[in-house]
Length: 116
Image (tube, rainbow, N blue to C red; front, side, top):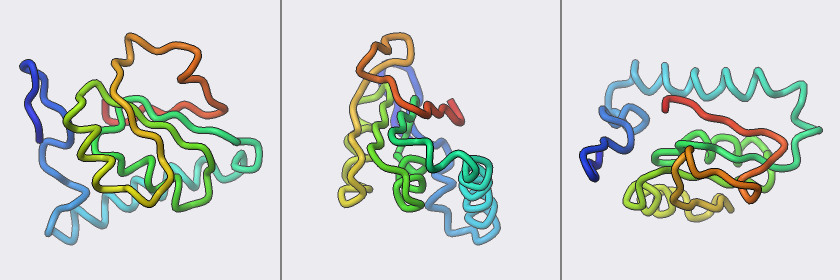
């Protein structure tokens, strides 16, 4: 968790990295349910933008399941740095931006926003 300008960024309980096996099972189920829901449309999706990416777990999961051209942004520059450090090999473009400041460069075939 990172507190920046009185805003909490990232996962408050670090649930994706939890040592609790039940929590990790539930979070992996959450990520899998998203890709299962998108599976019928995967061939049509050439680009993905995740708004409010936090540590980048969803973006990384989408990259691992074959989604190309993934961009992910978060309001906190510190949390974006953490996402880049956690997922350097995944080919994801992480950057800092508020959801209130999106523009055409954030456009994609699929835009996801979870847990924001």
